[in-house]
Length: 548
Ligand SMILES: Cc1cc2nc3c(=O)[nH]c(=O)nc-3n(C[C@H](O)[C@H](O)[C@H](O)COP(=O)(O)OP(=O)(O)OC[C@H]3O[C@@H](n4cnc5c(N)ncnc54)[C@H](O)[C@@H]3O)c2cc1C
Image (cartoon, rainbow, N blue to C red; front, top):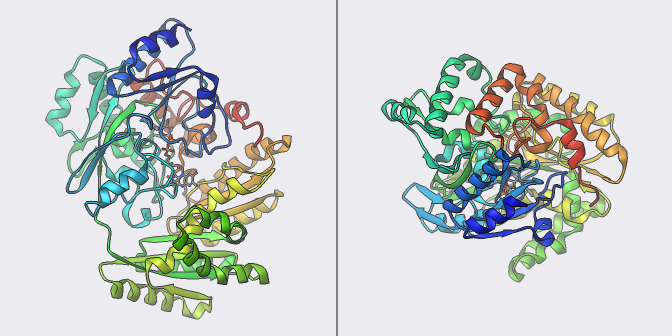
C-alpha cells in the first residue's frame, strides 16, 4: 500500500501494519470492533502533520483512507475505532509540558493518573476527570468532553479547555484559543485553510445564532453533536474554536496539546449515604438534597453492590496490603447485607466539600435532616477514608461488569442519557415501564445529581436478537429522554453508537449545521469519518463485537 510506504519514510515515530499491533487497537470499551489497517505512533506535532498530509494525498489518489486519533482507548461509544489509520498518542506524546498557577499544558497521550500527580504537586486538579480516571488519557478527556463525579459542582471539560494546539486537515499546525474581535478579523484574512475555517465558521455561527441558541442543551451535561453554542462568548466578546474541538471526537482536527484550567479542590469532605429500597422516593430525595449543593451526588444499584461483594477479593487485590485489609473490614456490613438478602435497590452518595471538616459535616447533617421524615436508612461518613468504599464501588461499577461476567457482555448503548432531575417523578416510571418490556438484566449507576444515568444491560452477544434489542430499544429510550428535555449522552459522546441518533435529538436544521461544520474543517472527510456526521445504523450492525 502506497500510504504505508510514505508514512514509514516520513514519520520519525513508528508505523506498523503488523497484525499483532493492529489487533491491539481493534477494541475500546464500546460494543464494537474495528481493526485498523495501519498503526502510527507519532513522536511530535510534525509527525502528526506528515501523517495528515499523506492520508489526504492518498485520499486524493483514490485510496479509501482516513485517520482516527486514539489516546487510552477507553471510549464507550466506539470513538477511537477505525478500519483505516489509527494514530496512538500514549506511546510518545505523553508529557505534561507545564503546570502553572491555575492551568496546565498537556500532550494528548498523558494518562490522567499521571497528569493528576503533577497538578496535585501544586495543589490543583482538573475537576472534570471521569470515573475512568485510572485508565484514560487527556486526549480522550478533551475530545470526548468528559465529565465525572465533580461535574455537578465544577462543570465538564469544555469549561476548562482554554487552548488547543491542533493539526488541521491539510496538515497545518495551529493553536485555537480565545480571540478578540481584531484578532479574529486578522485570522479571517489569512489565505489558507485556517483563514477559511475562521471566515466560514464565524459566518455559520452568526447567521444561525438563534437556531444554535435554541438548541443549546437544557441539561447540565451534554456531549452530543458539535458544541456550536460554546464558540462565541458574548460576555467577553471572544471567539474560541478550542471549545468546538472539545467533544468533537477527533473529527475536525487532531489535537497535539491542550491548555486546561485547573482549580484548587476544597480540603475536606463529608458524605451522606442514603439507602433506597423503593425507587419511587428517589425524585424527592434528589429534590431535597440538591439545594445543599453537594460537590458530588452519585449512585449505584443493587446489582453493582452484589457484584462488588462477590468480587471483593479481586477488587482489593489491586490495592496495597494495608489498604486491602482496612477496606476488607470496611465492607463487612455490605457482605452481611448480601448474605442476608437485604441489599438496597439504590445507594445514593451525596458528598459535601468545604474548607474545614466541621463545615462539610454540617452540610451533610443538614441534608440528612431535610430527609428525616422520609424515614430512610442513612449514614454520614465523616471523612474521605470512611467514604472510600462507596467510591470504590461507584468508580469500579462498569469495570466490575466488564471483567466478571462470563458469557454476558456489559453492553453500553443506553449508557449515558441525561434528563433534568426535576422530571424524575414523571420520567422514571415511564423509563421503568419501557425497560420492563425487554427481558434484560441491567445495572444502573450514575451522576444522579445531574440526571445522568449509566444503564448498562448485560447481554449475550452471540444471540442474534441482541443486535435487534440494541437497535429497537435505544430510539425508544431517546424519544422519552427528548420528551423530557434531555440529551442522549452526557459524557460518553456519540461515536458509532449514537451518531445516527443526532437527527432525532437535534432535528434537521441543526444536523445540517453539524455537516457544514465538518465540511468546513475536513472537506475530504479524512478525520474519524462516520462519527458525529455520516454515521448510520448499518455502521452499528457492521461493527458489532462478534464475541466476548
Ligand atoms: C469504567 C469506565 C468508566 C467511565 N466513566 C466515564 C465518566 O465518568 N465520564 C466520562 O466522560 N467518560 C467515562 N468513560 C468513558 C471514557 O473513559 C472517557 O470518555 C475518557 O475520557 C476517554 O479517554 P481515552 O483516553 O480512553 O480516549 P479514547 O478512547 O482513546 O478516545 C476518545 C475519543 O477522543 C478522540 N481523541 C483521542 N485523542 C485525540 C487527539 N489527540 N486528537 C483528537 N481526538 C482525539 C478519539 O478519536 C475518540 O473519539 C468511562 C469508561 C470506562 C471504561
